Image 1: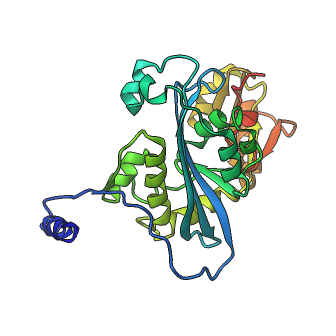
Image 2: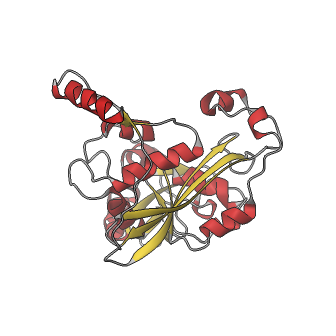
Image 3: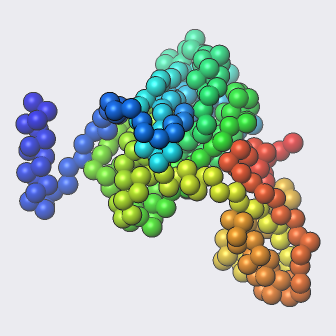
Length: 298
């Protein structure tokens, strides 16, 4: 039956008048032994009661543990984890509408902390499609994630350069002719695994290879401390962000761009030579963490 439906789908697509979306299918492991060094990675997704890592709680955790090579090729799925958790307060209506998770679904449920520690213990990298959110939601509950390298498949893969208009998981899947049941943790993990295992549309490089290359590169956070108020529009136009906690504009740049950025600040913002501005080196070990969130409390 599946072959017959695939044939129909191919005929429809062949007319040029239709696009057919196929459901994300389980990853098929490679049967041949890897001919390169291999590592362990995690794809992780959370569903939560809200977006505040200090107050909100994880109500569902999905993890896929997989083996990948230095080339970015994904060889096999090792293990999956998908668990619900009853929060201390009722699930907000808007979260229930988005995820479909109800108070009845999570009643009496608890994520097994020991199982989470075990599955994450030997991971070289943890990947999430919005790592700044998922990492901060996970660190307080599971400290093992504090010292892990993290990568963000949403912002550290050049999706737009590869011809995609949107970076949300559902949009990217559609561009690849796929769909999935969104906003459930393990389903989002399987969808992301399918994207990372595929070649990018323009360059043909494996998406995971591009992601790991970007994640490995250190960045520098440069603070424009004391910048004149009148220069805020110029800073915003150059992608500087405002930290309400530090009352200061800042930007994250790759190390090779640091001197170029100092020159911009000297010439366009301060109108004088500035070499004493605070600059913090950030690697995958700290990136997206509460520790490097300019708005984190404490």
